[in-house]
Length: 130
Image (cartoon, rainbow, N blue to C red; front, side):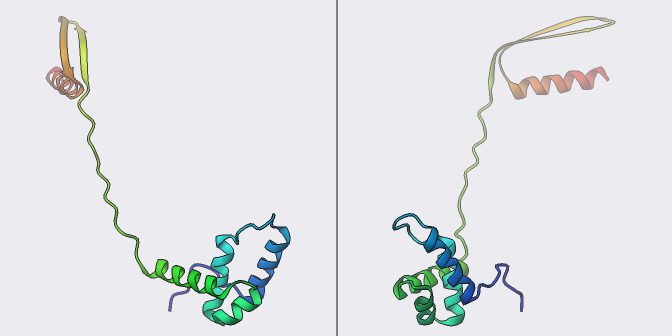
């Protein structure tokens, strides 16, 4: 049987965490999610009634947190659809290509050509030169 990737929390450890949080909290701050997760884990082993009494949390809140945690762990995340939009071809207003070699000069002037057209022309010129 494979072990859980999350470490198990004992009732005493959870109780110590809750006490430390209560001593350091400011005002009426809500119980953090990591403490609720620890309480839910302990309640699965020790029972909701004992855990709620020892940790001094409401039984109903703990029960709801346990139900939410079990639904989240057993229910796979729904698949999401991501639309990939190809970028529109970029138009170059004007482009001049000048090539020079031993045999002479070549000047090509393009207007409203796309970047892919320029790339194709460059490939053709390189292949014909070699």
